[in-house]
Image (tube, rainbow over all chains, first blue to last red; front, side):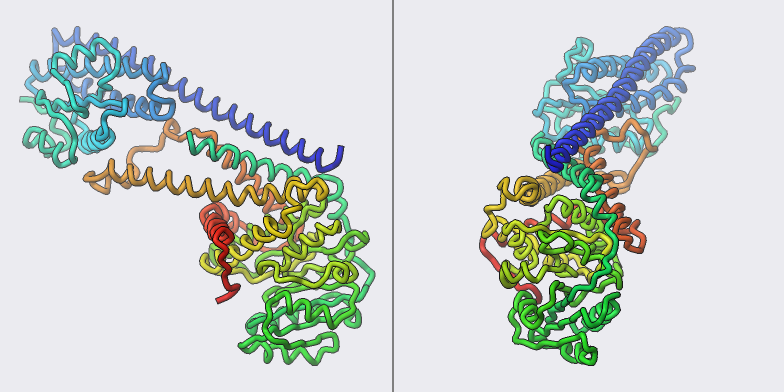
Length: 224
Length: 412
């Protein structure tokens, strides 16, 4: 075997080893991310049970739970962001992502119900947004709407935004959609119970909020 | 996915080539070449300096040649003024007093005619060329000559780096030239060179006589001659410690102009008169691997760069669309704390980093083996940030020129 042939073979081998090592490293890191998502799933389960417990406690002392509920919403938002990123990285059809989205949506619905109960029992007037999007390619403005809502949620931390994949096969979500009579076109919003469709601009979206609702960053836990 | 399909072969090919250079660098022939001691023999040597409007650098070039550690009676320095219209003749004049210096003036006819004019007036055993904007180390010639020990060696190249780099563009080239030192040294050990650069390449006179004069060679007479040498079955060696410093373009515009000439010359020579070398077993590693890879890399670089540009523009457009109406302080400034969870893990990015690190290694090796002084931190940074953005521009321009048959002036 000539020197050049030998060197070519060694170079091929090195390239293959490097390519394999990088593939292994990428796979390892992605697995680590998946493991973190699994932790998220566990956290979601705990949060769900915690929320159930809060529901039970509400019957005796509903208004004492307001502070903890306010903290809880930020965790929900963080989990939502991670889930959204994981969906981008792993694909919206990834089984684990789909399962997490189902759990996350369930938790959102429970939190939404709790918020409404707290509002009713304690006289608070939170601003809630139910946001329905689609990843099925039939919602050209969903990215814009999602980004505008992220901005609003960051700027006004007390704003409660609940995002739902309209096409997610989850019975509780389908019931919510049916009860709120959300039909389309997407994106669809229910802002403090008022339904609207489509997204044109951040300014137009802001105009749909109750007057003064976005005037300050900490208004939602206002007690009568 | 389309981008990945384009990028995978390109990145794997780049890593393969770097690995091949590294393995060849570590092989016995290259190791032996590095152990080569400077020569004691002093055969007759003529160094031709073709000049066209080089009034600002010719004096320093001549002085560096006069400072060569070589007997004056064995060394001819032939300054060829190729019809300069500036102060080059006046700048050359003071050197006429040296017995080993000869000055020739002729009508402007191009660099190859200046070289031929120099060759015509000497009967030296070895002929060297030095561009009039380049400067050599005193021991460079003694490093070069031992490489001619075997009679098959027709030419020897030096270790070329950038003279006093300033600014990002020149530092980028400094790193690139150091990379080139390693590649040239490794490829020479398996006779894989296809260019004998203007700065301080030497030729065996007897073989030049056999092969004929320098030709226009699509404005790359050094490449044409090297390909002619290879086609004739001779070898091109390299002396990695024969240091020569050359002035490099200081702006991106000038650099692109220079490299467009080099690349279009390469394509015209290799795809034209020397097409027979491509894929031809008779020419060994040059024909089977190096030339095909060089041609392929031009095409893949252009395709990959164009697609990257398109993908970037598309992403930027979408990002701007999504952010429309949202305050800039939120839309375009980072918010939130750093979280490893959000660091993208992408196979192509990781492979790109591997390729870049391999490039760094080859740059550092080039600096070390040539013993070139100077730091290269800024060079590595400039190379990392700029090379991938600028190089495709001259590749595209050169490819377009070759495709539509356009010839550009060398200067102006």
